[in-house]
Length: 283
Image (cartoon, rainbow, N blue to C red; front, side):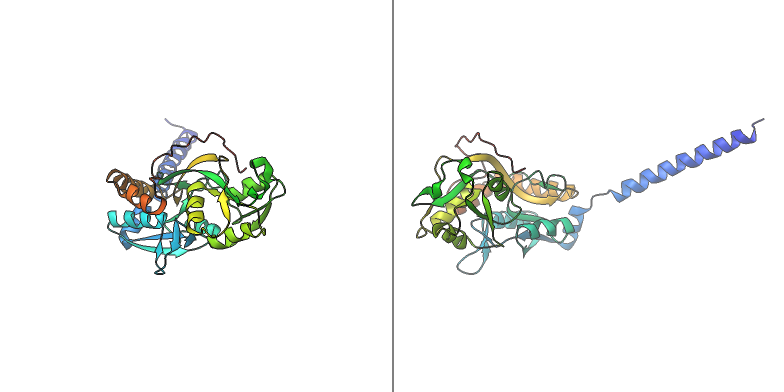
């Protein structure tokens, strides 16, 4: 005959097992990823972007929002039979919008920094590139290498990896809030600032689009081979997978290459021919 203590032990064990099973089921239900379902149900992608980053996201002469990242996002929406709605913010605002669920992802030439990798993820790459520096034509702003950034005035948005690299090398940060390219380049030309660190292809297109401003890309000082894509909240795995599937189809059928040629004059959806070995951490 079982003792009272033995019965209590069995009852306690049964309750514990039931509690564990219930907790596991509850946890499974709570962690269910419905990020794609939510987008599919509303039949609309909400995308954060800047509207000021040529040629990734900007307004053309007809006052229409266009650009490489913008047009790729539009192509993804079309592939998935969804409408698309863009919301405009500066870089910090885009990241916050994704984090808060105000946007499904951000499309603005995003790479992945160590500061973001804990909370965010990137789509499969839509652009491969490397980093470079814009300087004055007349004197190269006195810069011949990254080490020459010391005591120079570096222009950019706050909290970007480019500004962090500049400051790491001793440059003084001159920050802007969602400024246009002509303002950035003019300030380098007139000496208000000395240098802009950014993506090579973005800088190449910016300089070509504004040929009357006496600035240039510093030749053969290239670093940080990289890739960029759409920025997602890390928890939105189902949505990211669906977007990646659409991007794979767009790459296979030549759509990405066609959009790339339109904005960059080359196919940035594949790795560049230049060999860039120097890697510089922003941290």
